[in-house]
Amino acid sequence: MSESNTIEHQGPIIVFDAMCVLCSANAQFVLRHDRIGRFRLASMQNETGARLYRLCGIDPANPDSLIIVDAEKVLRDSDAVLSIYAGLGWPWKALALLSVVPRMLRDPAYRWLARNRYRFFGKRETCWLPTPEQADRIL
Image 1 (cartoon, one colour):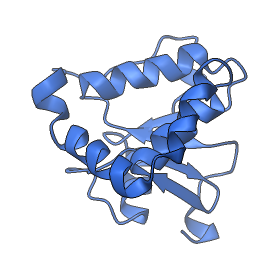
Image 2 (image 1 turned 30 degrees about the vertical axis):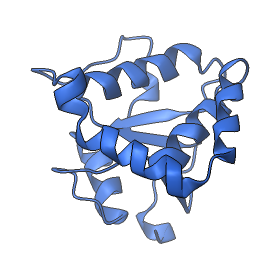
Image 3 (image 1 turned 60 degrees about the vertical axis):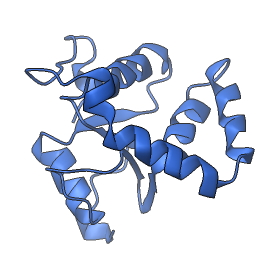
């Protein structure tokens, strides 16, 4: 990602599928447990999230991963999920210890779950919307 294509840096941005029940629940979990407001969120269904996906070479209409964009750094697949938990502090930070599992084992499991997320967890009729208190963290 070039500097001209990045969004003003104010911390990591999690780009997620707001129609996915699991992804929306994870976004709500992040907002509830990120007490210092480290993360911002953007759904792939809005222009900001779709643009970030495209900049990373991901089709926003058919994403294969959530991503975290932090300035010029992009994390995807299991690295992105583990980074979220590492950024939430204790006790959630302990889940980041799963990074000792080799990526070649973590990522196929993550991608399998991502491909089947609607089948296992369902798809919302409408995008999840934040509460008014959470709105300033959503792009």
